[in-house]
Image 1 (cartoon, rainbow, N blue to C red):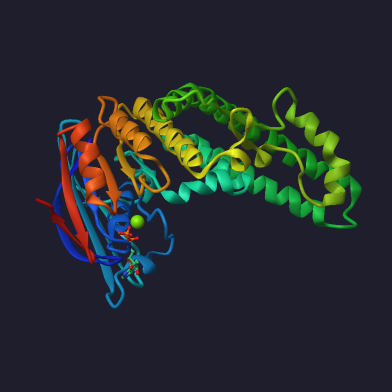
Image 2 (image 1 turned 180 degrees about the vertical axis):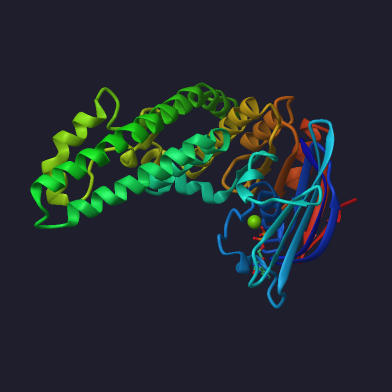
Amino acid sequence: MYLRSLSIVNFKNIRESTVDFSPRLNCLIGDNGAGKTNVLDSLYYLSFCKSFFNPVDLLNICHGESFFMLNGKYFRREADETVACGFQSGQKKQFKRNGKVYKKLADHIGLLPLVMVSPSDANLILGGSDERRKFMDGVISQYDPGYLESLLRYNRVLLQRNNLLKQNGADPALLSEMLAVYDMQLVEFGERIHLMRREFIEKLIPVFQYFYSFISQGNETVGLSHQSDLYGNDFGQLLADALPRDRVAQFTTVGIHKDDLQLSLSGYPIKKLGSQGQQKTYLVALKLAQYEFIRQLSGMKPILLLDDIFDKLDRNRVEQIVKVVSGDAFGQIFITDTNREHLDSILHSVTPDYRLFKVINGKIELAS
Ligand SMILES: Nc1ncnc2c1ncn2[C@@H]1O[C@H](COP(=O)(O)OP(=O)(O)O)[C@@H](O)[C@H]1O
Ligand SMILES: [Mg+2]
């Protein structure tokens, strides 16, 4: 699956641009603030019906304009597909596939699989456990629509249960009756979510480790493990045992909403021990593993966006990344960088099959 051509009108700092892309490697070169990341974001938008950065669509309209439009011509499963999106301030955004408007945006997600590797992924390492749950949830819900439903229902019941715990002086009989109902539902959805996360991480680990050692070419060992209260425990029993504590805390202290991922390098937490380059390698390897996962499940090679990968990585590591993504397991790729010489020399030595674009002040041009 790949994007043949893209046309952008008034999306962030890109007023008007139409570009034909290579089905393989595309490199966008330009100074800081030129609009390279904005181009990648427009591709993200066409796959996920939203910006990677701004949930507020108004902020994605070019300053001083009243609408934006994106139009992508894709080649997917041996057929042409046109996906268009329009958003006008004050109106609902519209998404069309081959001229036909989607009734629900959710129906579009999954049609054009895509993985974004962005500097903001650093939050996965540096941020709180919610970032890491979001990572697991984001990937799993891309291939299992039932997962998101379970998660929404779990969170709804959790909120109700927490509200109940906050009510002082409630009738004890009524309280325990309601808790029993809530706990039953938490157990039902929570165990399902636990199992899905566990299976996902188990499958992800070997692929992640493969990519890490390929990129680092060294003997650093990396670890990734799923941490959850539910390992080796019966969730219903955990809830019952934690009740006295929950009542004092006035919220639910055990469950899958406390899950985390332990990220380590040579046995130590990567957040504390890893250099910036090692952390970045860790994240790229994790995202490439995610790519491989989605590729197998969707039966299509997702579009891969590599934003600013040179930043903080040494030349050898970037070369290894370019080498691995130029292989058969990957399809169309977009790489951004500020320095043309960098990229030219690496690409030349790895693959002749790439197209170079210059991004200047929100304009995209084929570089000679
Ligand atoms: N809604 C918008 N309208 C106009 N310009 C915008 C809008 N949103 C962001 N920008 C501009 O886009 C530029 C950043 O573009 P970006 O793609 O992140 O640059 P880079 O090439 O460094 O990746 C900034 O100059 C920012 O002011
Ligand atoms: Mg950028």
